[in-house]
Length: 180
Image 1 (spheres, rainbow, N blue to C red):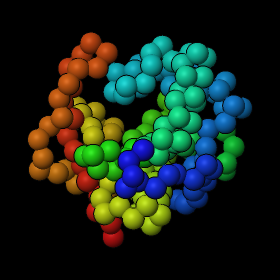
Image 2 (image 1 turned 45 degrees about the vertical axis):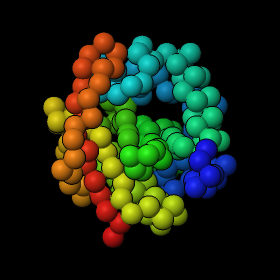
Image 3 (image 1 turned 90 degrees about the vertical axis):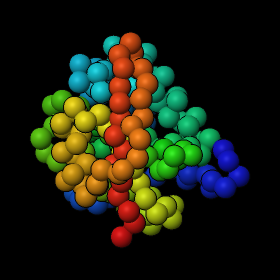
């Protein structure tokens, strides 16, 4: 962790927009493959595929390490603090404070990603003091572009981020939301 970054709290629970964003727990391991072992998630995200029990264990362990390092928070998206419906991420990096999300296929179409992004952005602004949060999205990912737009993000005039992941090239646009 950089000396300019403060550590994240050991436990985090954020409420708002009809959601409770909470830490992943051991009890969530069984639910994670149902949420994340899906072709859309495999295609659009760097998550492991297939996403099985071993991938769930590795993700939970990595989540805890990244939190301890002070770089990343991964929180379960829930409506009441109970069953996870997806995930929202906050990552501090040199290019900015990035948010990300993945909602399980059975839970899409309810505005969960938009609401989770808004709650996490409010946390970044109010608790971490950041001036802007970003989303890095492929233009062809219409669902994620819709989330960005509905959450109030605007496309930034910055170069595309290009690379290759899982054997396919990608080009990410950067969307930004400024502190109110």
